[in-house]
Image (cartoon, protein in one colour):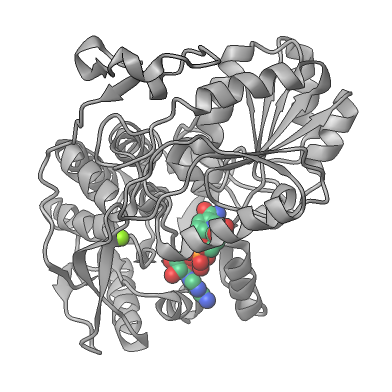
Amino acid sequence: MPTLTSIKKRPASRHLGRPTPELIFGDLWEFDPAPETADPRLKARYDLFIGGKFVAPSSGKYFDSINPANETKLAEIAHANAADVDAAYAAAKKAFDTTWGKMPGRERAKYLYRLARLLQDRAREFAVAETLDGGKPIKESRDFDVPMAAAHFFYHAGWADKLDYVAPGRSVAPLGVVGQVIPWNFPLLMLAWKIAPALAMGNTVVLKPAETTSVTALKFAELIQDAGLPPGVVNFVTGFGDTGAAVMGHPTAAKVAFTGSTEVGKIIMRSLAGTDKKMTMELGGKAANIVFDDAPIDQAVEGIINGIFFNQGHVCCAGSRLLVHEPIAERFLAKLKTRIKTLRVGDPIDKNTDIGAINSKEQLATITRLVGVGVKEGAVMFQPACKLPAKGYYFRPTVFSGVSMSHRVAREEIFGPVLSVLTFRTLDEAVEKANNTAYGLSAGVWTDKGSRILKMSTELKAGVVWANTYNKFDPTSPFGGYKESGFGREGGRQGLLDYCKLV
Ligand code: NAI
Ligand code: MG
């Protein structure tokens, strides 16, 4: 909620003669700009990080990373080709054979702790860099992404000397070199999810960040140097899909881990069919948030808002479908709209911003196109009348009601701040509608009854089911999907099992 010092009242005259005197903060109050001011300490140009050093790409090619909030150039990023990926794998293989793979777990733990502490030391700087490069609100990167990334390194540091307990009754061994490709929605956090368990287990890594959000990975390379990790334990190759394909297809990779679109996940799986590489895939989602008539309504409204508008809906487990119990549907939707009118869309570096910038021009075009399909198919669209910045990639929070399961907005992943509302009469109908999707990453249930939560959590085909909350994460808790949302788990003991072989 706004504090008294951060808000100022508009002249009262603007509100005279309003027919509906609803109390709407966005209308009544204006916020003074409150930009986060920490220095992100960016370089003008970033090279590849191979064998513990920054090295120029063999092609000599660089591309621009843009700040999506204002379309200005942030830094130049190296474009790695197959020869660079080869060099990264050679460095990782050497590190695995000579240092990291042989090191006792208790020694590896020290490096992981060091990385976690170094990240905490520079947390504000990383949060600002993440927001400038990716467009997410600073309160997200500051309060969620960066602390959670550090937490993943702490958690896995704790495992590194206890690997005898990962698979009771069995011994575990590292796999070797792991190839990893990550998306742009949680650049630093996905890096932590990928690197921390791999290193704890004794593997070495070649990782490719997404082309629109490479900056925090390259800043993390500085931490790797500062932590004194043996050269080659972690290597970053930046670039586009061609670089990603080279990382996933490299013969040295004993395992590949991918997070991104279902489409690209399928391409990778097809290309690796017949090889003995281990694989984990974390792909798309179309989660249902299911609200029963006995739910705590105000908390549920907050949960729905957090589930889809948080991080501009750039979340694979976003609650992009709301299934609401018919008896309360009208009242719930009215409350939801009132709350949406108070959301602040704008400059992500501002501490008051709720919804920041869409990550790229391409993603904005995808969202705009799919919302157009929703309108064409006859769903009823609601958007608040908030002003959007003149420059940069922004999209208003959008709600579609009158949606049926055949509508594309109810079936396809939009990956933007767009909520589709459906109704149900019985629990069975809610389960049926929630499961009627190609995906199965997550779901939310809002009800007062514990027994109903337990029944729903067994019947919903989703890797995570949140009850009376949404988008809660913890390094101890495994995360991953069913069906076209992928396979394998990240986090917890189960996540470690995907980075080892049993001996
Ligand atoms: P994408 O799947 O193309 O990109 C994810 C990563 O894969 C990036 O690092 C990219 O460079 C890399 N990549 C692209 N082609 C590759 C290939 N052939 N082999 C190996 N790596 C490759 O996702 P994109 O195009 O950025 O977004 C499209 C849609 O995907 C979004 O609208 C959203 O619906 C979904 N998506 C889902 C994510 C999730 O967390 N599940 C994350 C990002 C996007
Ligand atoms: Mg960028």
